[in-house]
View 1 (cartoon, rainbow, N blue to C red):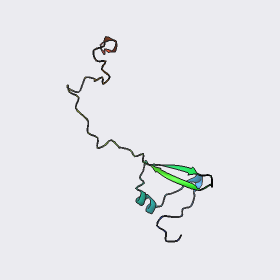
View 2 (tube, rainbow, N blue to C red):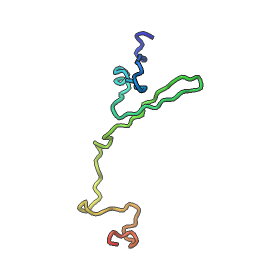
View 3 (cartoon, rainbow, N blue to C red):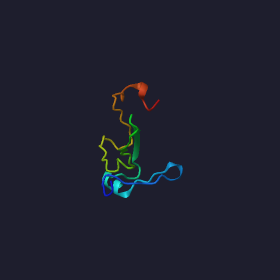
View 4 (cartoon, rainbow, N blue to C red):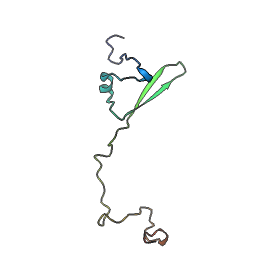
Length: 89
């Protein structure tokens, strides 16, 4: 497999730590905060799946105006007029 762009060799460090080679991180767009899921099949072959788990995933989220001055609460379930759910209680 020398020269294979789909493989790389790493050394397992103290405590089982493994560093993902930069070429693989770049190719798979693996970033800080992502998680890896490790699996072993019946033939004892190891596979690793990248699970995107990045921080700030809602950074570009734009809120939707719900009316009012932004100080009151909005109950989407329709209980606004029910005295049992009044905030004045």
